[in-house]
Image (cartoon, rainbow, N blue to C red; front, side, top):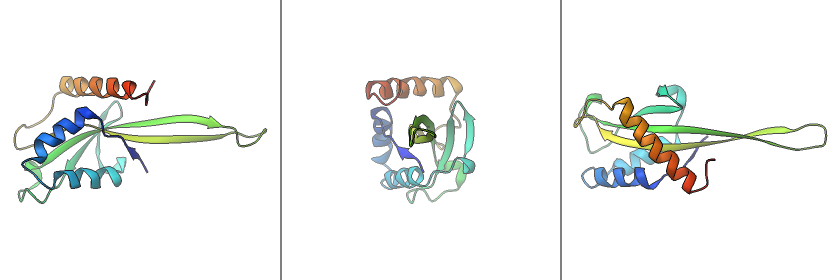
Length: 130
């Protein structure tokens, strides 16, 4: 299970789209709560592409929303006893960007990297990543 972290960069994008598509926020929440990396496309650097279904769009797969999410696994050791130490992993899921496939075919690697830089900056500002 992953703990979602919603940052201002993504909130701004979601707000812009959710004015027109009222059920989009619910679809995003649903995906973040039930995310399984085996079901989505890994595009590198711990980034996954997710297809979102919303009730607002009655069209097929090709005209739906896409969301890129960044997976962070923070591993730390805790000393359960003097002899053994347990390893704990906190897994965070950070939405990077969202776009409508009907408006644009795909997103470029440069755009993905730009979004990732912004997200990593915001994570550092929130003291969530070193």
